[in-house]
Image 1: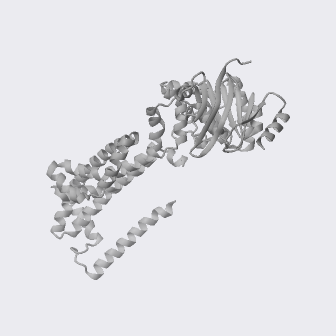
Image 2: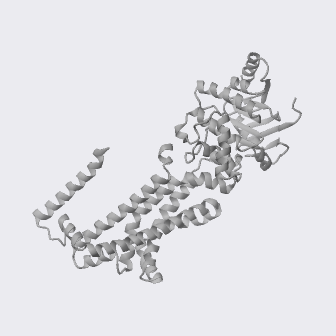
Image 3: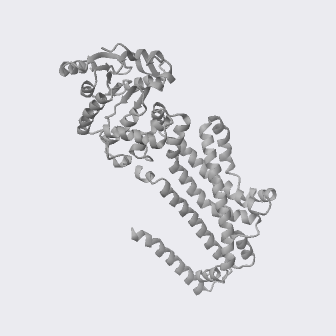
Length: 237
Length: 249
């Protein structure tokens, strides 16, 4: 369906000192597609995300995002949303979301106005001037997501965005994110240790083995969930 | 909330009462230990002189403190940006703190004369260190995850400094400023001892020579009031500029 691959990872490996974290991973993400990365803790999911983002260079292999293979080129196309919301307590919610616009040279007033439009779309209306300590965990993640979108990059890298939330908020946020990605389509990579979350939100799910991470199997997120789930659990064993 | 606030006043009154009783009952001569009421009398009788001394000393404290803030924050930023500079200068900065102010104050007076300049310089020298070290610590303690995310959010080195590192470092910088504020009074006193023709330090020096202990005590009270006022002012500015710091912590 998608002819162009926005992200191409070919045999990427990374070690920190003596610890081999990623052991040669290959995957492709089509333009506009959503791919989930699932695996046990420490299997290199977040490392792979940092490599794709251009924050680090792989020891081996090749990574291209929107055709760019160098770190600066990949960084220009990727926005990263971490597990911890990393909101800045010295800014209100709208101010936090408008950081990337201000970084890009947009004036404060206009940046806030543009962030406010997005707030309405993301169910954040009314929380514009809230401070991070006044927001619930779910709302903080929404603000962090708005901030990531406002970087206006073609690729979103979501690193366990709901990892710190309670189970019920988590399910709410999964539905919310599915809606947000449908309304504002982007190429996205979602790292999670929750297979169900990945199957629910992604077109395709890549299961990584334990460290050093390699691709164990790839699942179709659009197909029936239960066989895919079993296949993933089997691969993770 | 009210109990601890009254607590210190009660303690102070108790100490003053005991002090007063001791001096009166034992008939201690006032050149050895003046009674609190003697100091109070000196505060009243010499209020004109003490007021002009206080203005002079306060000016030295403020100017020196302001200079220390400006230079301290600027050097913290410079040391933060340049690892080379940090490696070269930081150890020297730490070592410079082992040079006693008492030793360099007279030298500064020789260089800069007997006017305001050497006093401001001495206060600035003393206050500079805590400001620089705390601000630099603040800048270097930024969660690296913030820096990574800023890079993916179109953050340049400068915009990251402005939007993340600087606000992050403010609470630490204010701690340094509060320490510096508490040093400023004693530093100004040293400076005036080293060569001054006015100010609380100069009055203390002449009063000591004349065995006028009540006046020395009065000058100490005024100096303490100045120190507290500067400290309180810095704390107030801190509460007004970074109200989020206490909430977020």
